[in-house]
Amino acid sequence: MTAALPSDSARRAELLDKLLRKRRLEHQSNDQIVAQPWTGAAALSSQQSGLWLADELSQATGTYNMVTIMRLRGPLQVGLLRSALSALTSRHEGLRTSFAEVDGVPQMRVDPPPGRLWLEEVDVSAVPDTSREQRAVQLVADCVQQHIDLRRAPLMRCYLVRIDATDHVLGYVLHHIVSDGWSLPILARELSEFYRAAAEGRPANLPAQTLQPSDVYRWQRERLANPVVQQRLERWRDQLVGMPPLRLPLDRPRPPAASLAGRKVLVDLPAELIAGADELARATGRTPFSVLLAAFAVLLQQRSGQHDLAIGSVFSGRTRTEMESLIGYFANTGVLRIRTADEQPVDQLVQHCHDVLLDAQQIQDIPFPDVVNAVAPVRVPGTNPLFQVCFTVSRGGVTTAPLDIDGVEAELISIQARGSRFDILLQVTERADGSFVLMLEYATELFDESTIRQLAMDYRSVLRAMLAEPGQLSVSRLQQISDLHTPLPTPDQPAVASGEQALRSVTTPRAGPGKVEAGNLRDALATIWEEVFGAGNGFRDDQNFFEIGGTSLSAVRLRARILSEFGIDIPLTDIFTGGSIAELLPYIEAGLVGSSAATASSSGPLATTTR
Image (cartoon, rainbow, N blue to C red; front, side, top):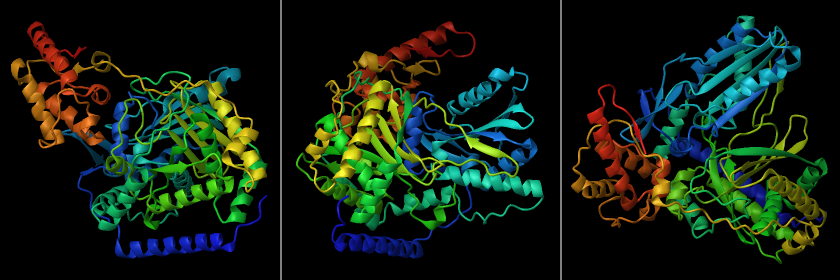
């Protein structure tokens, strides 16, 4: 292990920490989050708007489900559990929230307390003993991974399977749009307290809930106009503009539209590697996250051949103490732009990662969708904006927690993922027993499981070699001695769909001739383009949606205007992959003709026509 760097580094980190804490207190005293009476409907936060759109594009999958499953052994009282769930739903408005689209713009609606409770119970005690436990877990796993319709409250669904009188499997799922990783331990802790309070016939010992997520979302929207916040947005833009996309070798060509199908792989991370990362961090005044991130950057450079790396990460987004007890979606995505060089000493790379992380943490309150709009990257169908690979570290068991009920033993159950939001997510996770595991979630459309397992093994090799001589090795030498696997060079070139392939599912939800004559269809469509994108922008009929500045919100508005004007519902996926006037025009025209024919031949309810 290398000797500690001069004390300047440690002093600088300590001074920065004090500065951040001081600024946080100053901002809280001058910029209060104020609770306001609920008016029935409200705009979404920037993060929620982005996730709402992503859910619309997910083709009704459970990719954005936040899942917890546990085995409960002991005399569980289902009536008390139901009472506790009802009290929890009354306390947190996110558990009573649904979303509706009004004129192409999503709005958040909250039911008054206590709200609707979703608890489904199944009894498998009659199933033979040999398969009863497996059947119980599979039932719950299938339920919690179903798509949650954002238009139907509640967005928390609970499922309880009875194995016998003292043995149950409990699963609950929340849509990510009303929760995040920070929320799950809060939910488990408060649900446990409500259960105990009901059992003992006393009020729950919980502080008053003076704020709700809608208060925070409103405060976030209002402060985006603040000059200081705009300066932070400009810092993000300046850091990320011109950043190339990461091109990892793929096992299969990238499809024009991602299905978000995915799986996860778990690989143990030896305790000595975590201890070594902690020791190096202490000795140099950096953070263990910086050390672990540097090892990942070395591996990505080796795989891609690139030295300018875009790596996503997730921050809590809870920059205020008032937000820490809320169940809501506040987590924010950041992009870490890591620059490497073959002859760069590894300890300098760790320092660079440390500096990038500190800077990102200072400006983590800027919503990621606003960063994307400010950077305005070239958008490619089938890919996320700005980054495709994500890296996170979870320590202290903050991602989820079992219930804590007297007389009932709770054991968390892990299930296989069925979706992936990114090409690859690598998360270093601490288990409840203090051991660590590498969790790799990956897109099965792009990668084989063997490729991802090899990536995990190579990450361990890089980290082990890096910790042995952090001050002596260069990045290129570290790659050589780590004996890394070299995959076949299958380039990551997104498939380009023709207009006919891209517009594969245009639907006409109601029949009847359109409001516009066929001869005027092009002009009417161009008028919609001018309304959505601005008449002064100028565009050609063959220009793609993204080429003329299309964003998530403008895609929603475009779909709503086309539906209103022509009665044709075009899926958002098709707008992203084939969204030009020239490509949409023949399909809208055909849809109008089809709906007219359907009207002439139908004597009952209006039929839906699908191309």
